[in-house]
Length: 557
Image (cartoon, rainbow, N blue to C red):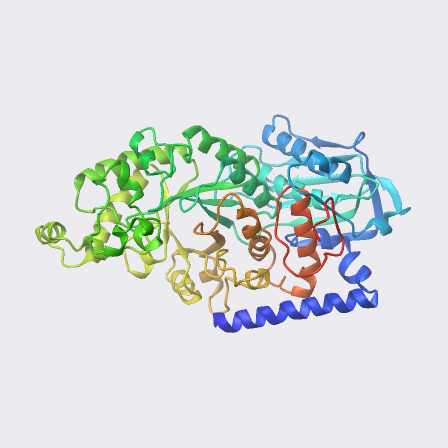
């Protein structure tokens, strides 16, 4: 694929969508095409859906209830309580009690006036496999949702499919300007296209508060993303409060800028309740120092060749923060073996992201390392890196972890463990090569949120399948991730950088491949942004001018 031509066509599509919107608004057609189709409330678009705009039902807070057929599903009970709060606390009367500036979707105010033909008093929820209570890769997330006046039900194989169905149900509940809730007759069958739909956050370049991380997970669940890729460490800082190696937190920005084990467990439990896996990344062998070496100096190379890094003003530059571990020191492996055991116990997901990108082998160009290599019959730094990777992969495997690596581990032809996943961030050609080799892959290329030149259309058209792979080869591509690298992002501005653009990637990873029409996506994306703001996520606007169908509680425009 040509990335430049793809960006050009994506921007052309954006212009066309905006022109179409303006024309429709000026001609009065927006009420039928852009505004008054209740299906425009849905994001991501379901696999199969039918929403009848002519059959409107009221939902009364005092009489409506969720009814779970199977007993003892406490995770689902908590989800029902959470969604009841979302559904019934969205009116403007409650905004003054909220922390953020809130909004209300207003597209259907005129259509539902006097048009209610009945009520929905119960949503019956049934789960066929109640044994699955922890989300892992491959957990069934499919569901069926039927909303009718007589019987409304949500059925799913697992509680995590039910969570996706509850999100869809909440999107179809509309709050009128009088603060009343209505919905429409709907029949939906839905399942994700890809099992791995992720968002990377980076708490090394800038510390992210626990509160912001939890808000991010909430927002992910609203877009049906299911993997929080937590880039915990880099050369800038290591904000993890290890109990095995207590001096590790000396590599944090300050004693306050750390996550305790209790913090991490809270995040994992919170995420699981929302159907989100937490996959932590501790990058190695590079991107380790200076941070890892502050508390344990023997771990990382000093890298004297980086002369400019001796200047304190360059301390946090990325170039000065890619110092690798010392792969020739047995003490490093003893340290890492215990550390990987600890993080494997704390982070319960089956997968551990171990980085492997951008290894600064020039930092290994020391006389002591060359002597060690000669003694071990090594003639290249690639052999030395393979030695390191083999060691740490064995530590992961002994703790029953599967590994994710960045693409350099694959393109350098290193030996990896079976079932290793390769995350591709440089180009589509590498993604195809990984899949053709029979290796499982994730796509990050084209979804870098720190690239502010990429708009939501660029993200929306970033298709993992380019038409050159066979169905068998395509099956090795498990999904992808939108990546919010943290060089210029902290707790103050992360939500506006991530949202709503990450949701464009979310639809590409959830909805059928042929859901690509920008003009049809545009009104749904507008509603999505308004919904995020209404739920307390300060998502950025994505086009100039006021947003039709969204009323703000504060005068923002």
